[in-house]
Image (cartoon, rainbow, N blue to C red; front, side):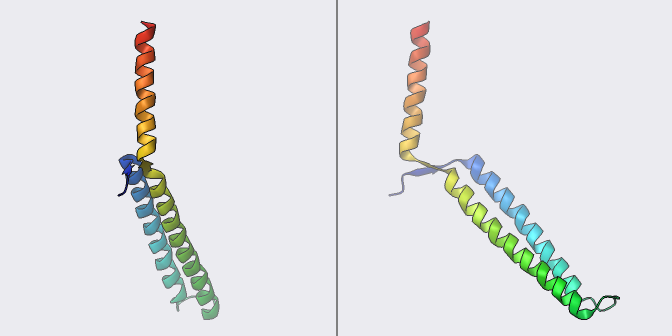
Length: 102
């Protein structure tokens, strides 16, 4: 049985960051394709293809980084049951301390 709960704010933030990063990676792929397939330029075709390949590699690397970061953020959003119990105990102790002072 899985005894974890999720921090929905952190999960939402991680998903938003992943979405934006994937959009950037797709745009870099688009630029790579446009550069590599350009024929009406004063640059050498070979140079265009090399630059396109570098951009494609950058896009792929950024996509992998994005997925790695997303998985890390999701793991951080998981709250173990032990941690929840400890947080509830701390909150109860703080409430008891506040009433003792009055």
